[in-house]
Each structure stands twice: as structure tokens, then as C-alpha cells.
Image (cartoon, rainbow, N blue to C red; front, top):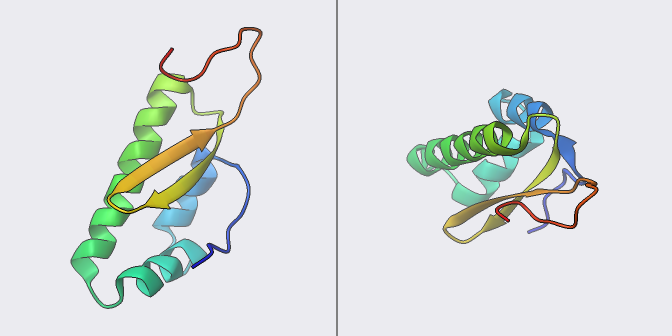
Length: 89
């Protein structure tokens, strides 16, 4: 089930997309979870919480990608640094 929104986007763009009830993101949640509103609300909440936590720790200017994996939410970011490190190092 490929997700139609591709590429890295700023955290603020993801938050705006998630909050827009008519977005492709919300349509994808409906496709995944059907009529189960509780699961859609929880998925939305988890994504927003993950984005906010990521922004707080690594900065809100990062471009990120949300990746769906059973039972998990991953926020992937790509940035250039003078050191070779990854988040959490």
C-alpha cells in the first residue's frame, strides 16, 4: 500500500497535512484503518507527538519523512553536519 506523499518535508508541513481533515494523509489512514475512528485518532496522535518530540530534540527546521511500520511510528530526517553522527549519538 504505497503512500502518495513522497519525499522529505519540513515538520511544520507534516503537522499541517495531518491536521487537514481532507488531506492525502487522512485518506491514507482511512484506507488503512477503515471506519475505526479510534485507531485513526490514535495514529494521528502518535504522529503528531513524534513530530513534536523530534522537533524539540533536533530542531523544527529538519525535513523529515514519516514511515509506517506495524505498531510503530518512525520519523526519518536527513541533514548535513560537519560531524558524522546520527540522532541519538
